[in-house]
Image (cartoon, rainbow, N blue to C red; front, side):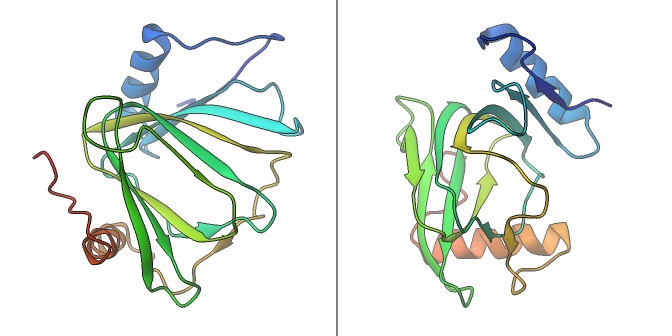
Amino acid sequence: MQNVFHSEHGYAGVGAEWIERLKAIALKSPLRRSRFCLHRSDDDPLHEMVIALAKDCTFRPHRHDAKSESYHMIHGRMIFIMFADDGTPSHAELLTPPGQGGMVSFRMSDPIYHAVLPLDEVVVYQETTTGPFKAGEATVAVWAPTDPRELRTFLEKAAVTCGVSPEIGT
């Protein structure tokens, strides 16, 4: 099942149709995620992506040594968690669309270990980062669990340690 799409033109727009399409694909995808890349190529210097994650989609904390990242929420709620190099949770933010009590937009400019924790059935956000993209360039945290269920529990505990409850709004 295709779950990554790229703009084929010198322009790209995302409306309700794309958002619903990405949500549906994420929920059906074995990877539990989908994305529409507004940039044309992995070699582009600026990468803007609209990403949908199912609630059970988790990524091990990781960092990018030479990239900044920003997030802008479109649908649903998620927690953005940062960690010290030794795995100690250092900061967390609830990210939500406008009017739902969290940060609408968040930027991280330093190479800090981070992960996201989706709170709703599916979340949609825009991520912007610098290119080019090279597979394997992120440093994945060796101290984080690899099992998806254990990882989700680890991220939930990290969020609580930083004062953000995964039970917010449920």
